[in-house]
Length: 298
Image 1 (spheres, rainbow, N blue to C red):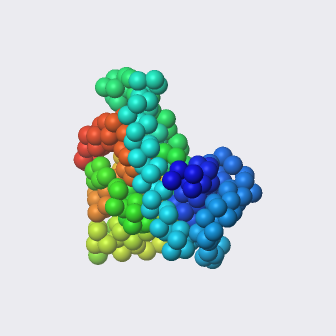
Image 2: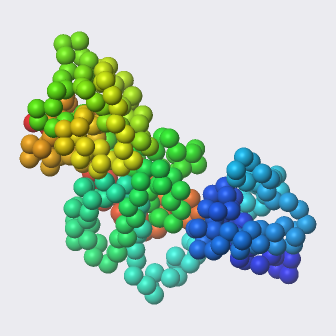
Image 3: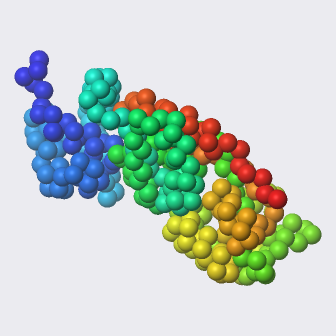
C-alpha cells in the first residue's frame, strides 16, 4: 500500500495550498518558490491521475477529490505532529510562538512577560509582531492573540479560546475640542480610525448607546499610530483601555466616557494543523489570568 503513496513534499505543498487558498501563500509559508510549489502540485495530480484544484477568482479551491484528500492529509499531519511532540520535547527547549499586533506586543504583552518567564523559566516565548490584516495570514504561530476574532473564518472562530473582556474607550489629547453632549453624542472635529478594525467604532457606538459626529476621518494601519495621532492632538481615537492605561495615568491622553466591553473579548486562536502543545496551553492559561478584567479608569 505504501508503494502507492506520493512523495511527502507533494502532500506538504498540497496541504498548504488547501489551507491558505493560494500557491503564493503556500510558497511563502513553506519557504519555497511559487514555481517549486506549483511543480509539487502538478506532480501530485499526475501521480493520482485526478485534478485536486480549480480556479476560484485569483486563488484556488479544492475539487471534490481535493476536499476528500485534504481531510485525510490534515488528519495524518495532525497525528504526525502530535506523535512528534510526544517524543521530541526531551531533546529540545520547549517553546511557544505567539503572533499578535505590534501595539499589543509592545504596550502590554512584553511588559508582562516577565511574570510568565518567572513562572515557567523552561519555556521560551517567541513573539511575532504584525498588523491586524497580516494576522489573518499568519500560519506558523502556535497562537494568534487578538480581539477582532469574530471577523475570522468559521474554522478559526471554532478553535478560538476566549481569554477575557476587551474594553474600548475614546481618547484625545488634553484640551482637544471633543465632548459628549447632554444627548449622548460624541462630537469632535476628527475621528481616528484603524484601517483594518474600523468596525470598532460601530461596536462602541452600539454598546455605549451613543452617536458619533465628526467633521472628518483620519485612518492609520496600526493602533500605535492611532494612539500617537490622538496624543498629538489630531483627533479622537478608539483604543483598548489596556493599551493606553499609562498614557491616561500620565495625562498625555484623556478618556471621553467610561470603557465599553465588546462581546468577543480577547481570544487566542491555536494553529489549525497541529494540537495545542503543553507550553502553548500554559501560555493561554497564564494570559487569561494576567489579562484579568479591564482596568477601571479614575
